[in-house]
Amino acid sequence: MADNTAVSKALQVLERQLNRPLMAALQVCARCGVCAEACHYYVADGELEHVPAYRAEELRKVYRRKHDFFGKHLPNWVNAQDLDEATLEKMAEMAFSECTLCRRCTFNCPMGVDTPLMMRALRAMATASGKAPEILEMLADAAIEKGKDPAMFRDLFVAQVAEMEKELQALVGDPNARITVEREGARVLYVALAGAHTILPPAAIFWAAKEDWTLSIYEAANYGVFLGDTARAKTIASRIIDEAKALKVQEVIVAECGHACASLVWDAPIWFQEQFPFRVRSLVEVMAEYVQQGRLPLDPSANPEAITYHDSCNLARTSGIYREPRVILNAVTTNLREMTPNGLENYCCGGGGGLVALPEYDDKRMKAGKPKVDQIRKTGAEIVVAACENCRLQLGDLNAHYSMNVQITALADLVVKAMRLPKSVAVPLPNAAAVAVGE
Ligand code: SF4
Ligand code: SF4
Image 1 (cartoon, rainbow, N blue to C red):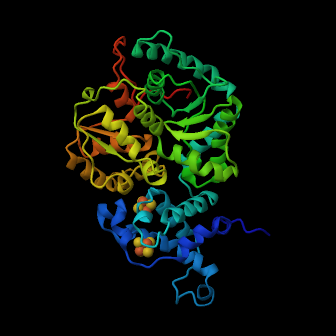
Image 2 (image 1 turned 90 degrees about the vertical axis):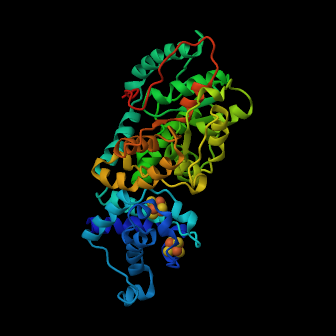
């Protein structure tokens, strides 16, 4: 009879995931401790359990019990351990609430140990055994359900976009400015997030750059990724991929969102074992290209406030997009104040890995965000820019929790503010709290 206990399901998932990179991560660690100071959780409280190598050891014990000679025969010698339900639960909570998959530990590890890869494996084990946070499951399933019958929400979405188009026309002073939805033959398919705040500013930028673009009816966010559930993540991503193929676009541009960009650029070609007939880039890369090509009428004096930029881990470390935001920022402000460290070495804000969606871990999230708060305060910035929705939500919560008294904004908002649009009328840009489109 098949063993269907939670522990057995988790172990089966671990076995299925064991490829060369994961096995290397599980087998290699010099126990040097360098990764401790790399992790914002450890920096925040100095607790041993927040050392990345300590976290990984929990999974290594289980791995050694099955795959190491001494682990099989003399488990106590090598600290190998059978997995039991209580340990699985503890490991699941750790993987979902005490690691944002930011990859800073990997960047700083002399051996290149991929701790987040192990934490992803743990998330997959937890999800398969029913131990994942319910909210992440619901968000992933809601996206899948919504995509099963797009006709159900398409008309409402098109009607909402038509209203937004009027705002765009007022904003840019052009009655002919358009936001088309799923227009076949457009050069670019832009995939936004839930909310007008990720559609209207990019629409103004596309208009100014004379881009041939159309809007996707789907959202770029992919909660299957946070669950470590490749099947659900693939289903969510496939909607956008199929849409892009059907419309015959040359390029898919993903809204300012770290995990959404990284999953479509890096994960999707591996999931589908396919080179797509279109390029995928972040809106950040595209805006930087417009700036360098002189396609945007920018006036940096429009943003005189002290501004700092928070590098999203998924954009900077995972996707190498850390120069492009600076290209944009240097064109839209004269008062950029960098955090230390920044770029590839930035500290995670503490909201990644889906944590901003999990209220049960709010206390941990606020605590883990303290190093980022300290970094921001040292810059003296009045405005904090982030090119990721999860980061912006986390920074907004940190702002309130620690009374930072800063304004949080997206790159596109600053770009629109810096654009010289003589015929425009003042249209307040929607913020992240605005009602989600198509919901
Ligand atoms: S820095 Fe790398 S090798 Fe050193 S303890 Fe951490 S994971 Fe192990
Ligand atoms: S990926 Fe980030 S949060 Fe996770 S252990 Fe490494 S440094 Fe810490």
